[in-house]
Length: 343
Image (cartoon, rainbow, N blue to C red; front, side):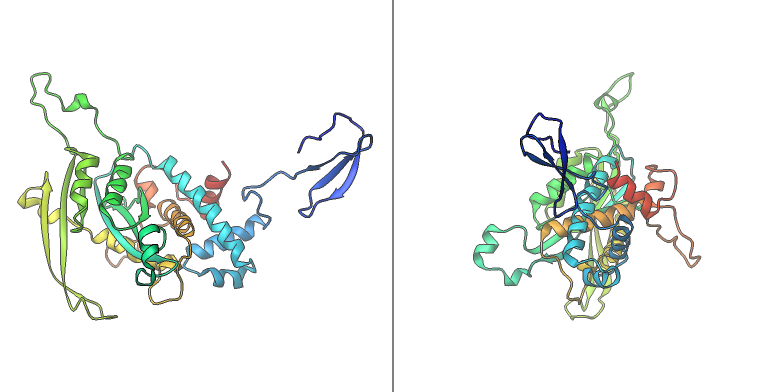
């Protein structure tokens, strides 16, 4: 309740404002004030919670904003505000939960998309001064064993962003104490790798991995060679790979360098986020909306989505969060919604 501007205690009701909040008026001095209703999990948004959940679930299942508008009868501008509110809350939730992780093999990749308009449409001034429109890359990583996506980042494909992303991922892992690598108790000192990392051939990765992980990593790159890669709308045929171990990976261990799992995750992202779909009219007009939409997907993928087991059994694994010991049970969307917004 907004405190009255006077100190008197003789008041009366004075109608309501345009949002339905009760107004009061002092009988003695005529001062007026408003008694605001308590806000729910959606804050100032006045749409019913169940209707908002339905809209978010439709968006997470690959529906476009206008398709969701037609099904739920929620205006598209309201849907965009709902994405931003829930997505930014998901980002805070993931930053809080994705800490102290113990993973085995992280695979990194960058996925192309664009915001507002494609890079070729930018003016010279926009190319110099705007980093939030044009070609944008979605930096993701996934653990080979648990299928957990511990972090993500959106930005240009640059060495600086590679360093920022690697440092962010390294800050979420558990590293041994410095004493563990010292020579003591008549034992020779040394560094024990805490994780293996596989990337593509982007030249900014080796320096970024060295900066973020130092000697506590096994790192290698893989470059895949394709035939007919320049033919539009035609699936390319992979004809070979070039693997190279940079740190801690011997010639015999180069076969472990792999990015197939994160590339498969790219397909899942393009399938379940309509704004990432190829050959459609869907795209993001603001970088903030794209970040919020993907944070929403990342939280849903880690805690609710079950990947399939290899083979033809059709069986499903536990969720990535369950396999990474972040939770002990399968989450539904209602539980995720409450954990993100009702805190």
